Image 1: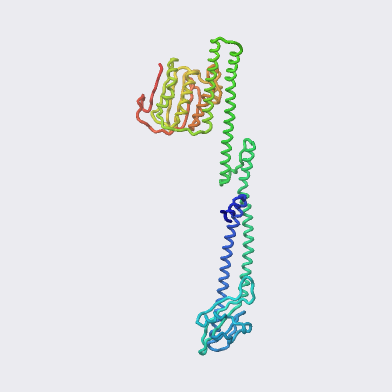
Image 2: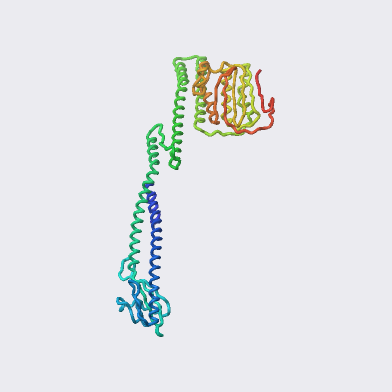
Length: 481
């Protein structure tokens, strides 16, 4: 069952925001103005009534003294009236205008006769009535006889002043309410103008707008401005997400085209005419190689997309030595087969990193050193001031000079490595892992060969002595010659 109040709230909730603010301001101002006007009216009315009552009381006391002394009744203040009655209510003396009209009712007459003072107003302020009076009556004993003295003053000036005050308060309150509503309307419009501008911007974006940013004042820091900055950050993330999506599609289409074309060519040749079992086996091996390349490429692209999307890494406490041993273990046998050494030197400590991403990044660097480098491979890790500095170096020919500025770009490969298998995404993945750990990756040439260094943040605490330590704070793990 719905009553008028829920319907009113429902109607109010359907109004535009500006209209709701104006209505709220108008209602609040109406309450304030009504309270203020009521206070002013009460104060003025109290003052006028006090003055009127003082005059009336003074006049009645004068009449009381004259009646007791049985002298001539004195004249009262301007607009005053009087009556002197006996105990039965007969008029013994009165002002000319009320000589034949008793000012007291029978009930009031009995009340005064019992010794009480009666005060009463005749007529009303609104609506306007004529002969408005304020009456005060009391019992007086004169010559052993009970007399009732009635004093009255006209309220015309007092009522006129109050009516004028009411009119002025009504006009002033109405003008103030109109002015406050107008100011509230203009203020609400001005405050919500940026919101409307943001809405139009969002609508333009929804309609296909590109690179849209909201115009947010730089010299303000209010709620609307902070909303604008938040929306701009949201737009930046949407733009970055769209750019990553486009980059992913472009990269995938660029790199998938070649192996798919090769596979299609191999299969077309195999199906063109009957082939021997040996030829079909060679074709299948070639197709299998390309399929493996496609799988590696797809997995790497998905890993890059996951890292670039801003997914939070899951840092866990890991012993640095165990992390490096686990990452390098798959490559030790390959180094031994090639007659090369692979050493790992590290601080004996615990780091807070995500081994799920850091281990394959280290593996990528080791794999690159095995495939493209020469000589001994060194893996070093040092922790200083909450940061892990990890480097992989070899004794090969190093990076080509024109390759270094683009070493971590996607699908960028040194000319000397184009004859070897690879996707050109390994160093890009390493850089993405470093960035996800609030760090950087750097490729450089040393006097001995190539080196890639990761500088990432890590929360670390010292651990006990390592069983594989050659000195204080240093562990050495070595395989090969």
